[in-house]
Amino acid sequence: MKFVDEATIIVEAGKGGHGCLSFRREKYVPKGGPDGGDGGDGGSVYLEADGSLNTLIDYRYQRKHKAHNGEPGAGRNRTGTKGEDLVLPVPVGTTVVDMDTHEVLGDLTREGQRLKVAQGGFHGLGNTRFKSSVNRAPRQTTNGSEGEARNLRLELKVLADVGLLGLPNAGKSTFIRSVSAAKPKVANYPFTTLVPNLGVVSVQAHQSFVIADIPGLIEGAAEGAGLGVRFLKHLVRTRLLLHLVDVAPYDGSSPADSVKTIAHELEKFSETLAERPRWLVLNKVDMVAEDEREAHCQAIVDELGWDGPVFWISALTGEGTKPLVQAVMRWIEEQAEVEAENPEAAEAEAARRQRMDEEARAKLAADRQARRAARQDDDDDFDDDDDDGVEVVYAPY
Image 1 (tube, rainbow, N blue to C red):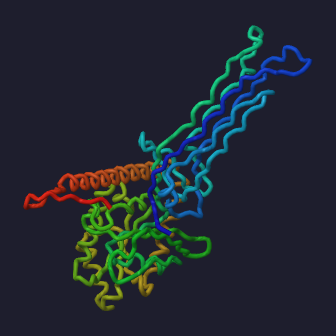
Image 2 (image 1 turned 45 degrees about the vertical axis):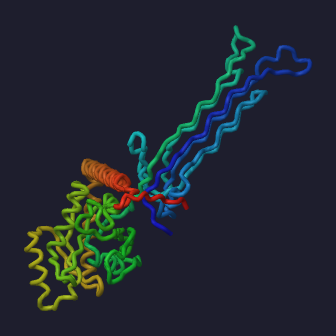
């Protein structure tokens, strides 16, 4: 199934049913009085997080969704049937944004969580409602109100505890295959990973965390090079970043320069995301002679001036991966304990995630606008006359 992490849809709630104008007319019963019933409320539109979904592809092709209208009232004080609510399933991790106001309506991060995105119209009143001691035969009714309509952008961000960063062919997919049951594509050419992959890492009984692998970044990604920054937004929900680097690249490039390149692109995308805890993971140490590994890896660390955690691994052979995932598990549990004991820490973490969301959304919006402007410039520069002054007429298909 194609991975789609963004979609725009139009939702419209149902109209409220009109009130009924009716009088009781029954044989041998004089002065029956008003008996017009109220209309039914219009159906509302909800989004519900569904754990069985992992893509928004259904909303790429079907964009308009409308709930049922309420039925009008009827005589004998019969109330119209309420319009049925419309519940749209979306993947867990979907953010809902109003495209007209740019307001974030909600974040669906739990299985079964529901969010009302369009309120159904209110029912109209029948003439029975207007009966009084001075108005025994009212002819007033009210119409049901219109349902709410909204233009929405659905943004899917995968839910993971740990995110992987690195250049193409740094070994991210091999690493996630080594430590989890996920089986992303692995090949000896760049950009084998085209969509985010998730893997559950089981450290021991009742201890596990989720790790996310995104497509590799290259220099200039923040300006749209390679696969651009589209998938970086999936890292804003992670707590920890593992920066994988190839210690023996086949092209002879500097591993330290590779780390600096990714760090620079990360900072241009979101300063808050760049401040996230990031561990350096030196991968493919099996490509270096055993007696030279320590000196080789230490030289990379020294060149970077890295003062954070450093791990040496071989994702292919599994060497060093167990201590790494155990350290990650301990760090995640420690952070969870701190937030559980300190509400202020939990609030600060929520504020950081909100800032990352806003920065990511602003960056992606600017990227989309730049692409549209570039396409417009290309159209303006197109000339239907060739260099010889001969007019070229293109026939329609």
